[in-house]
Amino acid sequence: MAATSDTPEVRAGAKPKDLSYGHLLSQGLDPKQLVVELLRLEGTNGVHLLAKALHEATIPADRFTSIETISALEDLKASACELQAGTTYALEENLTQQRVACSQRSVEQEFGVGPEVAIARHKRPRSGISYVNFTKILFEDLPHTRLAFRNGTFSEEEAMTIVKEVKGLNQEQRQEIDCRVYLEAPSVVLQGGKKLASIIRAWALSYGSAKDEDSHEKANDRRFLNVVPVNQYESRIVGSLPTGLAVLVAQAITARISQAQKDGDSRPHSQVAADAFVEGITGVSDPSQVPVTLGIVMTDRTLIQGHAEPAHLEGYGVISAEHARKILCGTQAHPNEYDVWVRRLYTAPGTADLIAMDSAQRKFTGNLRKFIIIRDQFCRTPFCDSPIRHLDHVLQAAKDGPTSVENSDGLCAFCNLTKEAPGWKEETVPGPRHTKRVTTSSGQTYLATALPLPGATTYNVEPAKQKTITEPKRSN
Image 1: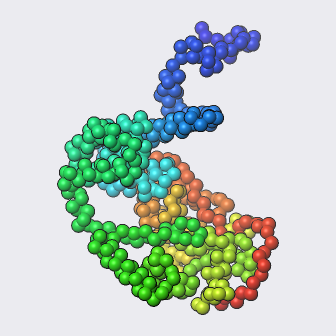
Image 2: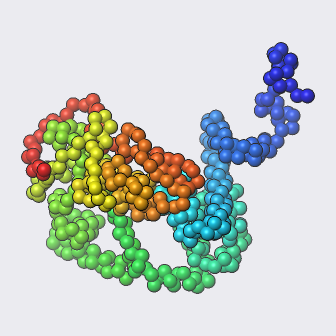
Image 3: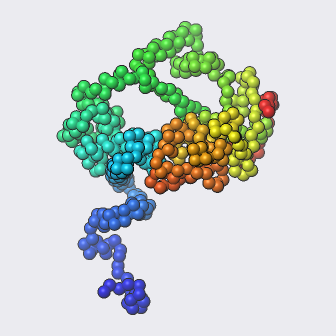
């Protein structure tokens, strides 16, 4: 019988067996088999143990070994990503079968595992739908690509590129391209990025994809324009137009640039194009003058005393104190000629949680609506940074949730729909600021706390040199 902690041998202080790596190897241990057994027996805990074991890995000292280690870790990432994709695929299949058996809603993908998987991957919930679709095509139609992905020949990004280019084909055509990837591997591997996409796209287009023809017809329906913050000083305008409209825009911009050159304008072509775009949308020809309504949250000491505490610009995020003052008051060279109104807000000391407001209505309107948007800033679902589109009850109104600041949050349209998935639950809980607990359909829980507003932090700095500032008008 084997000795245990209760046997006389152990109690007498018997020397334990040598479990060092070198000794185990000398006894014929297969390191790979040991890791396989760890993952097979421990499951998710084994994955956690493996991840923690990497913390103890030795960082190489010489250049060649360092590059080898970086390459090996890339293979490890690919293998982990392939396992993650396989787990997602199996989860979606099992959930679909369960819902069909229970006659539950299963058609809309918003009610599948997409958003939940995205949150687990620390991604925006909306991205989960495309990721689930990626795993379906990869595991059902592209066995050779999946094997190359598992072995590290393709990265996750490259595997996604291949899936993206073949998703408009039928299953037979996808499998033919997958075989071609395997047979012509020397011309496909190590291409990456745009070159890999170009190769696969050329093969896919040879089938005369009906989706490609349909894309041209629907291009007008897919036009869009978004404003994406880059940093506290800049934002990027991104969008998509049908080719015909895009050419018209390009011609109009070229005409403005040519006219500016004739007039002796010293601005670079790119600035002329940007200013023409802004003027066409807003009517503002001088970038230093901003007549539209901007919501800026800042402390009184930042506005009046020249303090360095950052401010919050609604629809963007944190900006520097100096930049906020320039937006409100302008500069000596370009004073702000437009009316500026100040609305007083009050925050709880030390937490910057806005003072509560209540409403007897079901909808969040008026100052209550503005109040919540200022507090939440972005969609409150974990890992989602989309703009707020819906003001929602944390505990749904249909479940007798009150219309109050405590029971409110700002969500994007997608996340507002996602929270209606079977088993999804949200509730407010105590926290340093407004906090809600999100319980997903599988039982995973996440805390979502509102971002801090100006006034929460003590700054051990002297106020900047005071400047003459014309105090804005105040609204009641």
